[in-house]
Amino acid sequence: MRILTVISNYNEGEIIEKTIEDVRKNASIVTDILVIDNCSTDSSIEQLKRLKVDYLKHPVNTGGSAGVIKTAFAYAHYHGYDIYCHMDGDNQHMASELDKIVEPIASNEVDVVTGSRFITKEGFQSSFARRIGIHSFSRLMSWVGRRPYSDITSGFRAYNKKAIDYFALKFKQEIDTIVQLELVMHYAGLKGKDVPVQMRPRETGKSEINFVNAFKFPFYNMISFIGTLIQKPK
Image (cartoon, rainbow, N blue to C red; front, side, top):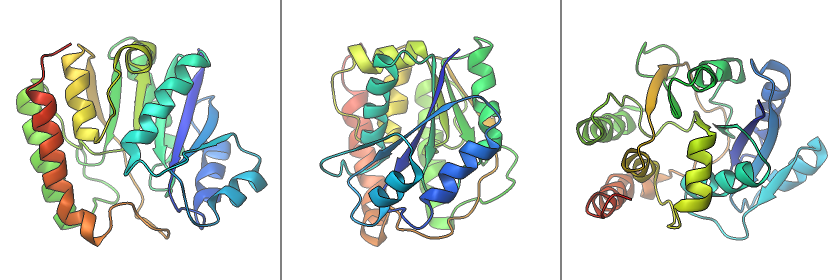
């Protein structure tokens, strides 16, 4: 079974080495590593070259990690991977917990696994304002998707070959938000579950969720969600 771990990076030049080395040294699974850079403007690319890690760089910023995920699906499909794991480049996700999101897929229990910090509520829990948005959209998706969603915007995820092939070959639209991605997976009949994980607080770097985007986030996600909801399920 071939596993690919994709690290999403945007202006994480100060911490990306720590993230990569965490996977190299502490990953609880055997995995290849690919960094997908979302058009960083800092020293990220120089760091990736120095670390001799495989990477792809977007020529333009896609506005969030959802665009990185679409690229990752295509890469995983065309390189024949069975499982694609996703981590953020800010070192908040722990490589030692990769087995937790891989095991339900390896045992053919589900197609998609999300690492949730809100099941056992251990480790870093995000800011209060952001938790409100996460819990609101998680409840909305739980109602639509008819299964429990607890951390819908979590970037710590794993996808099986069925999910990889669906997004690489059949789903031709852009993926604008993680919330939209979850709804599309529900429409596609992909079975998912949340598993408890712990996360670290951000140490440094620049989040793509800045002050302005923090206010735009719920509105943009709602528009994306409604737009996907009213489309005919494929």
